[in-house]
Length: 67
Image (cartoon, rainbow, N blue to C red; front, side, top):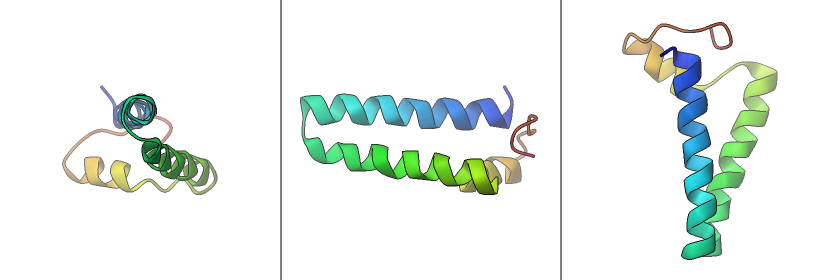
């Protein structure tokens, strides 16, 4: 699995889990979803992703999107 797919899968899973938590537990969990959504928006323009840098430093091979 490439670094790109790991980043997208992890962020997608976090968004789904926080939406479920906001419905089951407390609405405050939606703020986590907002933060990750804003991060994805800025990543689309700048190409900077802290998680991608971290995964690259531990030896993951980047795919086409996040080199």
